Image (cartoon, rainbow, N blue to C red; front, top):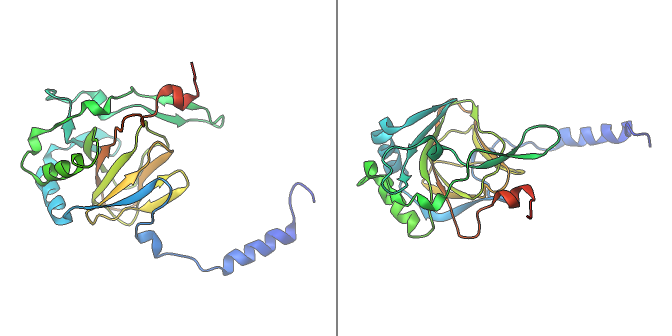
Length: 230
């Protein structure tokens, strides 16, 4: 067989693919897969959405279609620094597929104080329930404008996602698995130590609570990420 491949095989495969049923329904719901799972814990979505409406004036515009509201902070740090809104990630930038580090490494466990701006709100109840179950680092409300996408990257630690507002065009991808995360009060585990991105291909903004999970011994270091054993 020549390197260009068989005309007959390609034609037969194309015909089979065209005759296979196509799916437009399952993409409107959650599908668990490697790196994305749904917890049993569930919150009241009506209370979450109303709380967000009441507090959205606290959102900080980071530019490029991204918005943030910090729910946890380092004790005593009343004004967030630029480093509080970023953090180490690794990405591949060209066809060499070499990984490069970006931004500074963040000690997620240092973000142990709930922001008093949100004391007494339903967001405080969410935080209380989460810390009763898991170690929680930076916990933020993150907004993403329509037709907006994150970079393709990986983080040092996994994250929890709690959608507050979403739309059918809002998707989360970890490695080869892609799914919609409905805003129904559910809590989703996303293993963002793998390559991932979040995209909003819909006509409305996407708003999630995102919380880092700084489990001891589970944070990826630069040495591990870049294969440096020294």
